[in-house]
Length: 110
Image 1 (cartoon, helix red, strand yellow):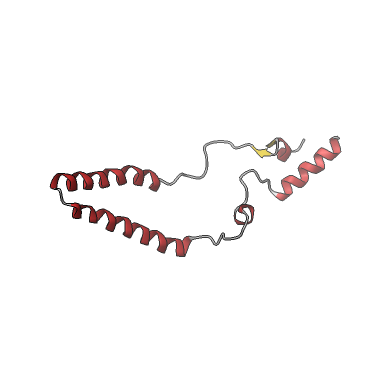
Image 2 (cartoon, rainbow, N blue to C red):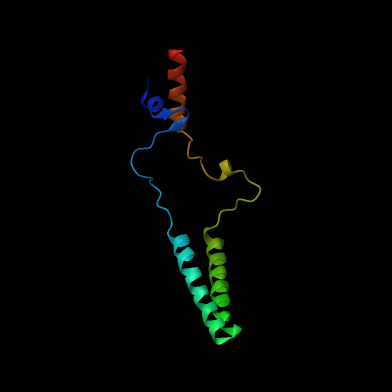
């Protein structure tokens, strides 16, 4: 049995070691800082009975959305009307040469 065939179990490649793709921390920062910031604004507006204290929260939210839009213009992927497989290689996909040698090896042993 070839090394490529041994590295494949039920059509999935074995991985050794930790996940090579680091997870972005941005969503976790926003998930923690956002509620704290907006909760503080709401608390101050409620205590002062002045709803205009919420406006900075809306401005920060709008600025973040604009920044995300500008980033998407430069780093975004044109994915409309396309299948996921045509945009990115599936994680369980094998290399063409490894797949070919694995099929050849399997046909010889069968």
